[in-house]
Length: 232
Image (cartoon, rainbow, N blue to C red; front, side, top):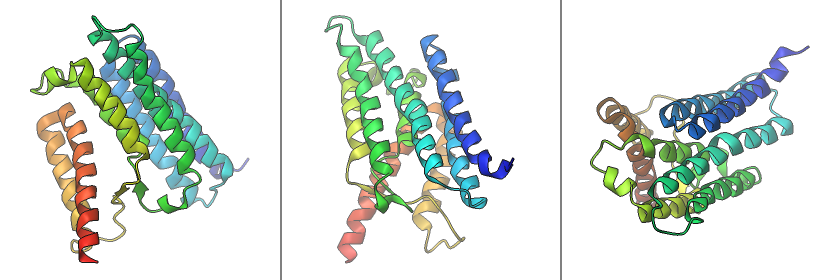
């Protein structure tokens, strides 16, 4: 048996396995453990493609398997987390309100399907990738001790985050690539600056850094797009 041929798909299944465990953790309200398993799943999601390219075994099966695994880890899990958050804060509104959290799952599903047929996203992204959006959502129940906690605990803010989340994943917004192919500060100053800033945020703000990093990524991309168009 050619191990190299099957290794990327095995790593993809590890991503799916982590997503399944994360669902159990969310059910038990262990949001910190769910975050770690989702982060591990995203780690596997990165390396399945890496090894597929390295061993030259990339194929249509791997593409479909990758999207199906992501649908659980980066689709079902964040939608379920938002369902739980909305359930906690839903004291006087409709009992159907928490189910709107799964709009995130629907948005992720549409993005993953569209990503497979969009040839524009080979080197960079258009719209927020589902793993980045997932880390944003997964971090929300973990920043309850921060200054933004009162906002996160507001049901209308959570609904706004849900809708914006689903939109940004599928919006026609080019996001700059984080791939640095050679160390050239002049060429990759935006990427290098963003990565350094992100590391500093993580070191000082811990879980609060996660949503701030995602927001910074989107805002910097929008500003960068504007500057590029202005130069043209």
